[in-house]
Image 1: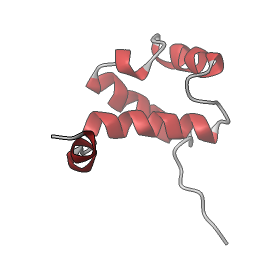
Image 2: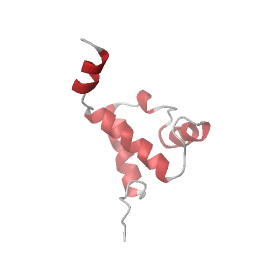
Image 3: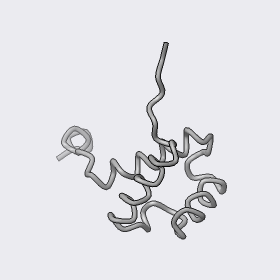
Length: 78
């Protein structure tokens, strides 16, 4: 199987979707993913420096917290 074949069959897991939501929340706060500021922000919220270190439950709790704080609200146009 070639690399291109793998890319076409790969589907994001619920865990990947949660991590993406954390990255989107950081973007809404103008925090660049992977930066020292991002890691400090994540550590303040979770005690961890990376989403990869979080359990699925911790990721889910973090996303819920970010929603409550308004970091994951959809932008309206018009």
